[in-house]
View (cartoon, rainbow, N blue to C red):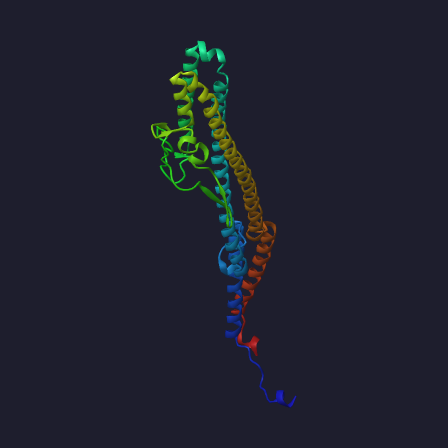
Length: 313
């Protein structure tokens, strides 16, 4: 007590009181502005200073949503490309199986007494090869789907020469995860004498060789078409079927990743909303309370200046 008894009276001057009131009013005004901004925008955090921790979390969530959206877009585009590739490969198989059936259907009578029937089959094979070249140049958004990283508009020329290059395209569908969204032409159509599309000297493919053997028209050449040619054709069909399985598996994987990425976007967006969206009813109630508090403080401050000197004595 002796230590305190030596202290003089603590005097709060009007200037000190005024400054305190002004500081309080300034803080109330800032709170009112923040609440009004929240109600106007619907956002709980409009500037980092509103809530620095929440603001940092919001930025992280927004970045995560952007990445998830990109993965979703990549996967969905991949599904579209693979769907087209699968449809095209099915068409390729239909053409090849028709050729297989036509060659198998050459009868003994045709071999000896009906050269026109043999010529018709040869023409069917040649026509099939042209159909395959057209299918090989199928495009997605202006890009030949079987050209790899080569010519973007054409995978094969009319002579069956491959114009593409590089590996089959892939797309990123999750962090560190890629899915193939196509196959290269050679993986589908083969190359050289065991390929399907070559039709020039030195690059005579299976179909061109069968057609040539049938056009030659001798019993030996026709039998070659029915044996060696047919065996090569069936081997080529098996290659196409194998690639169809690869494309089908990749499409299934891409669909799964598309669903996963879309789900991630939904979840992250909901989390962002919980953090960012203002509780409107609560904000309006807080604003009303803050306005009442501000008006009371404003009145108290105004009354401070009406006090007489005698009221401080």
